[in-house]
Length: 253
Image (cartoon, rainbow, N blue to C red; front, side, top):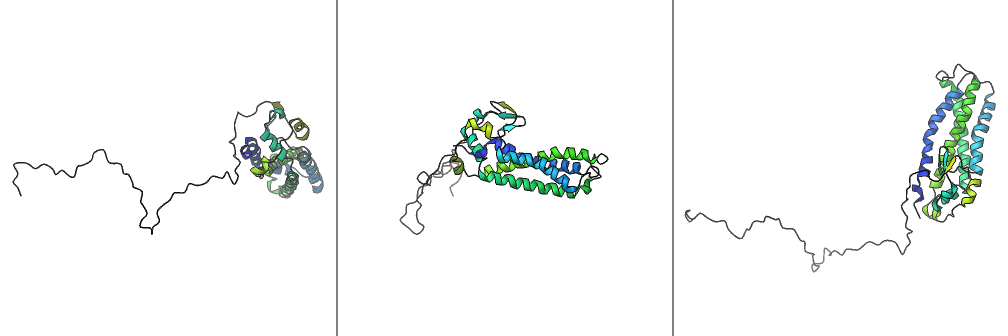
C-alpha cells in the first residue's frame, strides 16, 4: 500500500484553486461593462444556470477524472490500483455535499461581485461597450470559476480520508471509469514521468517498534558499576615520568 496523499495528480488539481482569484477578477470586470440590459435577478439566474449548473451536474453524476492535464488524460486501463482507489473515493457520498457547498459558495461570490461592480466600472476595458459583450464573456469565465472551485474542493475531500480508509477502499473497475467519470481530452498511456510512491507499512499492536532500554545505575546505589569510558590518547604524548635531562656542567642545587 502506498501513501495515497503523495499522488501528484491530487496536488496538481488542488493547486488549481490558485487560478480562482484571477478568474473572479476577470468576471468582475466583465459584469461591470456597460449598462445592464436585463433585470439583476434575471442576469444572476442566467449566470447561475449556465455557470454553476453544468459543473455541479458533472460533479454530481460523473465526477471529473483528475488523472488528466489540460486536454490530455491517462487511459483508464493504465491506472494502477491505488489510482483507482482514489477514483472510488470521488464517488463517496460526502463528495456530493462538497459539490453543493461549492455551488453555494460560487453563487455567493457571484452575488457579491455583481453588487460591487460600480467600483470597477471605470477601469474595465469594456466600459464603453455594450453590456451584452461583458455578459457573453462573463458566462464562460464563471463556468471556469466553478470548475476551478469544484475540482479542488473534491480533491480536498479525498485528502481528508485516512490511510486506513483508503486501504479498505475497493479499486474502481477499469471498464466502468469511462461511463462513470468525466474523462476529458486525448487519452495517452503515460502523462507524467515514471514515479514510485513510498510504501506505507501496516502497523499493528504486535508489530509496533519497541525502544531498547538502556540500564543506568541508580544515583542512590553505591554498588552500581559504572561503565568505563575509553578516551583516545593523542598521537604525540608527553612522558611525564622521565624528567628532562640537565646540563652536566650546571651546578647541583
